[in-house]
Length: 95
Image (cartoon, rainbow, N blue to C red):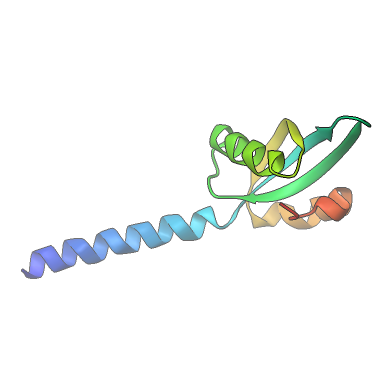
């Protein structure tokens, strides 16, 4: 019983660590809207630091507002937020 409780505690701690690290993942991207053509650069928080998985998540979230994802430039941690804030403007952590 003690070993099972220990294993369960370990599993919970691992999952909490994964959730905490996922909350610290961000991506910068380029998107567009047609008719008339509008482009924007933005920064978004993502649930996974893998660029491929982040791309699918970003595309889905942007499309809900009529935007089409053009490119995910990079995926980074909180240390990269300040340097990108000025360039993202109104699209900084908007979606």
